[in-house]
Amino acid sequence: MSSHIEAIGQHLLESTCQVFEDNAVSLSDAARCEPLGDWLDPIAVIGFGGETLRGSVSFEVPWRVIQASHPARSSATDDLVDWVSELSNLVLGKLKTRLRGRGVVIQLGLPMTFTTRATQTGATGAPRLQYRLRAPDGPVLVRFSAEVSPLFTMAAPRPVETAQDIELF
Image (cartoon, rainbow, N blue to C red; front, side, top):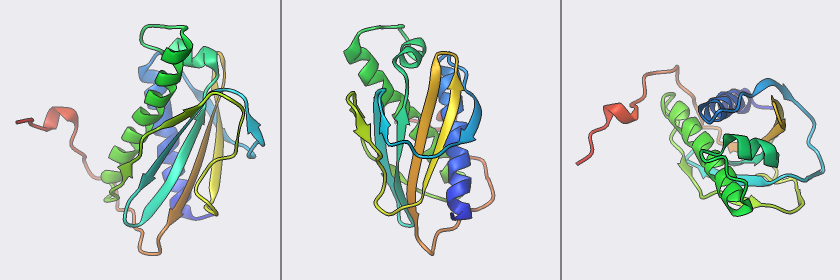
């Protein structure tokens, strides 16, 4: 497995923990795990791509964790399905910002959410990392698949603009 994939996977984990923490759910004990055949909880899948990196991330989040992190603590299925998509978008947005700070530019796709049994997802033939993170109401699973160009480089971290640094006209 590429060291670049491992490094991006670590940024993804940190981004995931931060988004959930920002939404009142603490994730801990991140650990690599073997890919499972089928997922039973809602799954959000979001793709990304750039000149030297492309792939996808899948999140399986138990219903109770989605509800605990929902801003209005809604229990309506439609609200929870929308929220798991938004969580995936927030995580990938944080990953995009972290990578930009290392000179890697990616664009994000739109998240898709499945509420039925789904099988493994990811970029075809790409290396896969799967992580299990512990939440108070059940495990959150994160799958990361990516293809990295031989031209891919990731620079040392540098400051990245935040929303407070950007002027809107």
